[in-house]
Image 1 (tube, rainbow, N blue to C red):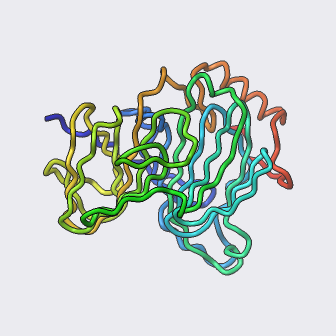
Image 2: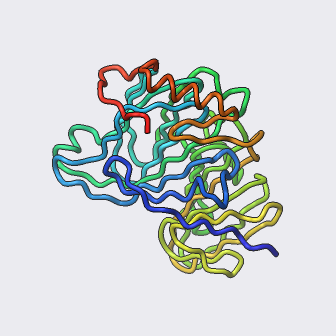
Length: 286
């Protein structure tokens, strides 16, 4: 029996929002299509303060934002403007060029708020990484759920546990939000070749080994694993089919061809990029 690969996240700060980031890592560049994983830590914002990620670009990926607490306003160069609430999915496919902003909505900014959630990036397959951009939003009620013997699963994206999410993923994907009551068990099936879990809160054991909270455990391929809740716990599962070749990541750009990243960097630096309506501030190329 193989042991999971444990990836301990590094702490970062994104425009005032503290995060933990286990992906990408030198130990593991991707899990299925997932190439980036940010845990936005529980943060209480006083009145007048909030998250404000100014206009910035993307290529070759889809961003998926999923919140546990708080709200985020999403705006992009496709003309989308959407408030994202807990349990909802904000899905943006960048294609060849998109820009967006993410910030605390004005009314919450005025009175103060708490934010807690996840943002992941999924690399697009080669045939789609230079395609058109797309944005869609899914309410909590539109996401399929399963509740059985003290284990509650909401499928955020992809397929798994006999559920299928409406989110238009571009390759085989598993992304599930899981709550387990104390002393319950969950078998993590072999439906997807690559899988990982991230324990947000609580205590759990994987094949009788304690799970480190807020670390990404990349599971051995081809091995069925059993998760046991030592206490009430909350976790997410990610995974899917391996990428169709290696990916380069530079700043907010993901591509199979390094030349595409260089072109994107030059375009953003020159101001030759789609803009978000009504937005003038932009994050400079690092």
